[in-house]
Image 1 (tube, one colour):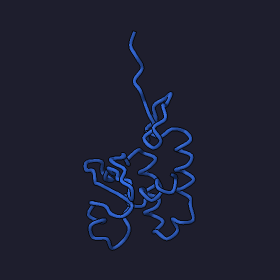
Image 2: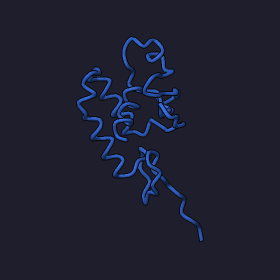
Image 3: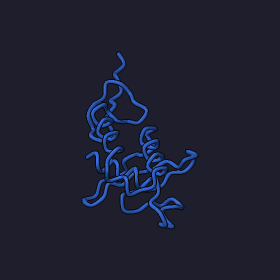
Length: 116
């Protein structure tokens, strides 16, 4: 008899009964959606916050490692061909390297930090 694959939430590690496109369980997804509407995000440009929320809904932020200060993620680019290392403090995407404005990847990392 074939064993079911062990599917876990990428945020909390709980076992999931069904696969989800974003890799989150229902409770973590609820927390992330609530954090995406947080008042703290009003400091960023609204179109970048919308891109960050869309990135999270599509499962474009994959946890890479957790340090004591920052959670590091692999963020998928908007065209889906490239990944960038992203944390709340920095991002390796072209916009993040210029650091004129906060990029959508860093905003998505901030949303995930708020959901914790």
